[in-house]
Length: 283
Image 1: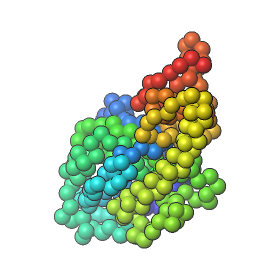
Image 2 (image 1 turned 180 degrees about the vertical axis):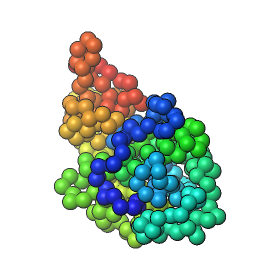
Image 3 (image 1 turned 60 degrees about the vertical axis):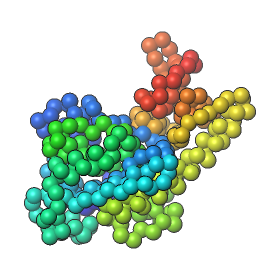
C-alpha cells in the first residue's frame, strides 16, 4: 500500500499537521475519526511517492462507493506527480514514471475524487496517520479547500474486533477472513480488499450490538439505527479515547453506546456518536 513504513508504526510527522500557508483554518474543518460500522460509505486508498504529506506526492487515488453494504460504483486514477517516482516507491506499488506520464495532475485528480466521494464517510486502512494527511495537504495546496468528511480507520477497528492478532496490516486482516490478497499495494485492489474486511468486521460489531439490544429489550428499551459502534476500554467512535463506554447502555436515538461524561453541572450520559448524535440524559 505504501512505501517503507509498517502499519501501526508511529508516523514521523504530528497528526495535527499544519498545512503550509493555510494556518489552522483548514485543520478546523476536518472530519472526525469514527470507530463504527455504517452501511453507506466510500472506501479509499492512496499510493504515494513516500511517507511525508508535505514533501511527497500522491500517484494513485482509488475509491469504492458502498450503499447498504453493497458496492455500487468505483473510482480510480493514476496521478502525475510532476517529478520522478522514487525506485523504492515503485518497488512497493509497481507504479512507474511511464505509467503516470499522461495521468492528470493532482488538482484535477483530487477534485474528481472528492466530487465522487461527496459527503460520505471515508473508510480506509491506516488512514488516520497517512492517507487523510495527504488528502488534507493536497486539497489545501491545490484546491484551497478542506476535507470535512468523517472517516473510519479499519486499523483501529481491527484492533477492536480481532484482539490478539499478531499484526494488523490490511493483508493480515484479509488473510484472517480468508479474503484474497493477490494484487495488494495497488489502490483499487486494496479498496476491494478493505471493503470486504470492513463488512466482515461490521458483522462482528452487529453481533455485539445485538447482545446489547437484547439486553435493552429485556428492560423495555428499543434500539434503532443503521450504525454499529465499537466500544472497548478507553476507545470511542469519535476517537477521543473517553472512558466509560457502557456495555448495557445504548442511545435510544441512534443505537450507539452511551458513555458517561463530566459536564459543568456534573456527570451525564452522552451518545458516543457525538457530534452526529447529540442525545444526552442525566446520569
